[in-house]
Image 1 (cartoon, rainbow, N blue to C red):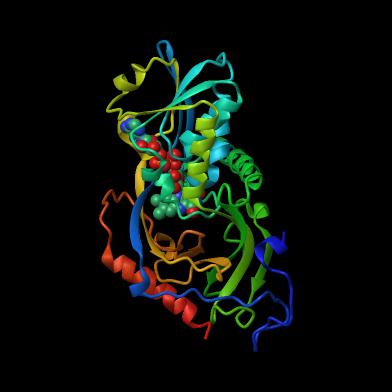
Image 2 (cartoon, helix red, strand yellow):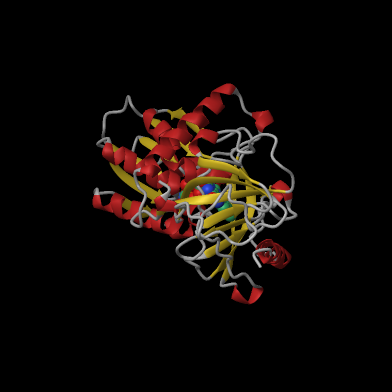
Length: 363
Ligand SMILES: Cc1cc2nc3c(=O)[nH]c(=O)nc-3n(C[C@H](O)[C@H](O)[C@H](O)COP(=O)(O)OP(=O)(O)OC[C@H]3O[C@@H](n4cnc5c(N)ncnc54)[C@H](O)[C@@H]3O)c2cc1C
């Protein structure tokens, strides 16, 4: 695994002044400036404080299986949550089924159903390019999915199962075809860490180590190094769409404006993978948006690690830098209950300037 993430130990690559306790090839600093910004995008995480909903509901002769509300971890949970949803149809004879939505949940659900012998039609308002899933930054990390005080043990067991199944599934898809690769990640802190911050799923983040100031180029901070997968959502969703089509799947572009519309579908088994759309469609007042804003810069293949933290926003604006193949991405906002779609210029400026400062210490 080490070779795949470009971490082959070498003392020759050490920059002067770095401790020999930890070595890797030199860290390249991303080029960050306002005039390099290609595009800024806004997206809304479908957040439920009480956790995502995978549940079966009977409406006369129709079965609706819900699979929505994954907050900031939906890309990571795609396969696992969809496997939970598909299990709820295990008593149904493989036949024609409907999936509503073509984000990560709709596509994973549809692919799993096809593999189980079902004939699947995806009904969707937007194709994947215009879904929230295509906005996701792309770290494999099933976090920001719920409010600790509002979930029970049953939900946590479900989350754990979904995360592990999904992690395993993604490890089978690494490579350029699905846009998934292993990558070093550094969580940055002002103080030494007393306990792991990623307390859940800690075991799925490998190659961990704590670096003190002087052992890394991130200034006076403390860094926790680990390895996880980076997912390029555009590549993944495009390939899943191609797989779905190849397996005989059909797309119908349709906007559902109410439950009656949904229940009028000819299929008797309907998977509801509408993300934030479920709030209106199924009258779910627990489902709220968490606004995000991402800044795209030109890709920089020399940067071979991701970073989290280092800014002033705290958990409502955790800075993150992901060197994806298509863009170098900077993020840093999580605004609960904010439905606005406008780009916030002051946030763009903050995200860019704070990241610039973070990498200034590279010298
Ligand atoms: C800025 C940002 C960064 C993120 N970063 C990450 C990350 O790094 N890692 C991670 O794991 N997750 C991340 N996420 C979260 C992740 O993107 C979501 O949890 C996930 O995409 C939700 O997928 P979904 O398929 O449920 O919903 P969506 O992608 O929103 O798909 C819903 C689908 O349903 C359709 N639909 C909705 N309503 C209707 C209707 N009434 N009629 C017909 N069709 C309808 C839509 O057209 C769409 O096709 C991020 C999200 C944001 C916004």
